[in-house]
Amino acid sequence: MKIEAIHLREIQMPLAHPFETSFGVTTGRRILLVEIEADGLSAWGECVAGEHPYFSDEQVDTAWLITEHELAPRLLNAEIASGRDCPALFEQVRGHRMAKAALENAVWDLDAQQQGIPLAKLLGGTRDIIPCGVSIGIQPTPEQLMDAVAKEVAAGYQRIKLKCKPGWDSEIFAMVRERWPNILLSCDANSAYRLDDAGHIASWDQFNLLMIEQPLWYDDFYFHAQLQRRINTRICLDECIRNRRDAHAALELGSGKIINIKVGRVGGFTEALAIHDIAQEFGIPVWCGGMLETGIGRAHNIALSSLPNFSLPGDVSASKRYWSQDIIEPEVTVSPTGTITVPTTPGNGFTVRPDRIGRLTVRSRTLHRGQPIAS
Ligand code: OSB
Ligand code: MG
Image (cartoon, rainbow, N blue to C red; front, top):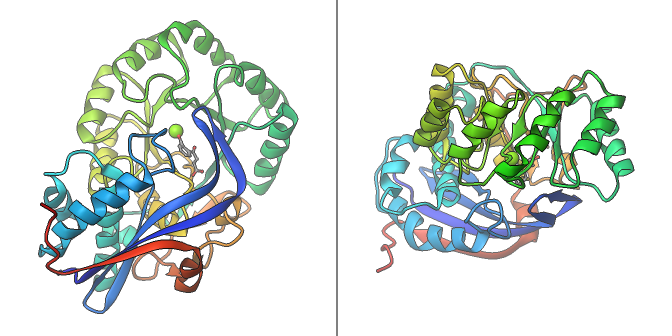
């Protein structure tokens, strides 16, 4: 395929509820969307870079810059057969994986449309429905946290993940476990602890957590291996897994026993699939993480979650938990048993709403075929 035009748009969308992690509070999102056009078809990709470089070193403005000046021109000068050709095309640009993923994922989506098959099938998906969990942010009070958990348990979600940090951990886990002894419960520290906290973290074994997500440094999997040897609960790696080599090294080291795959964090579907496969070879389950996506990123997460080794509930949940109105139709909905049905129509199975996107857009730019790479 020859991509004829690429549209970059930044939209701004208020979150239905503020989301607090150990690295900060998000009340509204600034999101870079890309739209690619070829052969009369158009496909969208969502860049999951945040407003600040707190989760990773990327941020929406760096992603815009790199997409406009480096990545989009490369795509607009190439002839490619599938999304699998994107990593090589973008290889000269180091890092910037979230920016790369937005374009690569749009190419996969376009390919699925051209072939008239569901994106999930193109990726190798085998599931008709995917199991869903939720990520519950740090709340102003423990009472509010209990209310939030009660709401999501009642909605049917299959796994509850609690964001935690020093001072918002053991007491909270104890309260939740006391009221819900049998739910699948996990926590996510987003790198808020240090190896000196190993004894404290080991004390969480009593809460029977499914996993503890990224307790230590965002760029470490060496000391995570030391921590994993000192605790019984499985560590799940998120931030530190950038590519298949990281996954391979981390699994060989014993840094964790579960991997959260975020397609943006690892640079696109090609790398996400490779991590899925290597984890499977090691007998390690994976699940699909979330980055407070709109429906566009959410649709791509659903397709990815349909692969066989995505055997644990992911952080892919209903549009209405994040947005008063999503930018796709239909919105993503979750069944009373905590599942999402994988679409079976060609492409990602959802329709983008250009009218809504238009109203939310704060800047846009279109690049055409032959656009030179900035010198
Ligand atoms: O670490 O998984 C994370 C949101 C923003 C940045 C990092 C993370 C998260 C979440 C929310 O946990 C997942 C979601 O519901 O989209
Ligand atoms: Mg995480």
